[in-house]
Structures are given as C-alpha cells and as structure tokens.
Length: 133
Image 1 (cartoon, rainbow, N blue to C red):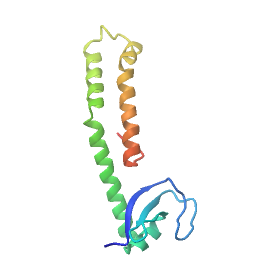
Image 2 (image 1 turned 180 degrees about the vertical axis):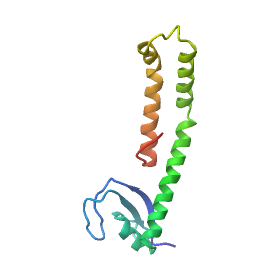
Image 3 (image 1 turned 45 degrees about the vertical axis):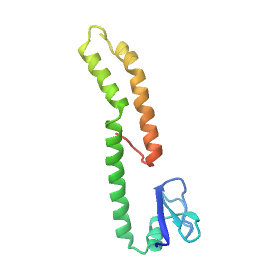
Image 4 (image 1 turned 90 degrees about the vertical axis):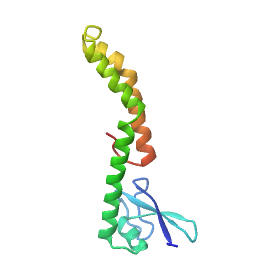
C-alpha cells in the first residue's frame, strides 16, 4: 500500500508543510495512510513524497485538471438548468413580438440565468475548479 494518497489540489492553503515555503499558488493535499494525517504540500515536495519526478507529477496534475474541465463542462451542459435556459432563449427568439426589447427579454430570462449561475457555483465548489463553461 502506498504511504500517501492525493486528496486534492487547490488554493485553500498557501504554504508547504515539508519545506515551509510560503505564498504558494496551489497546494496538494496528501493523506498519510499510516497515520491518517492530512497536510498541504507544494507540488515539488508532494512529488518527492510520492516518489515520482516533479515533471511526471506536474504532467499528472495537468492531465487531472484537463479531465476535470471536460467533466465539469459535460455536467454543466447536460444539466436540466442549461437545457431550460436554452429553451427559454429559443422561445424569446421565436416570439419577438412578445419580447420586443432587451428589458422584457431579460426579465423573462432572469430566473433561468440565475439557476445556471447557481449551478456553476455548485459545480466549482464540488470539483474544486476555477471555471465552468
């Protein structure tokens, strides 16, 4: 069994527990499987603890981030909130006589836009990503 497990990567902490480096842009949260302790580490120190090269580790991180971007994009675009917003926009476009100006369109679309924004925030929080599109 491996000694360390990666729990996540984010900017919740700005220091490395191993080397005490400060003001890091992101940290890797590792769990020590023997003690159960969880600490933040910089990417270089995390790679050392995981016994892989820094280059391999950063490649894995980038691959993980790309995967999460694709996953969150797919979740967002297939959601019922986005589908409802698209239908509402189509309805506005098809019925320009009912929605002659931007104000009436926005009044009609506002609840749909609000729902999709809330969904984006939930996805960002759950998957620890910066952007959802």
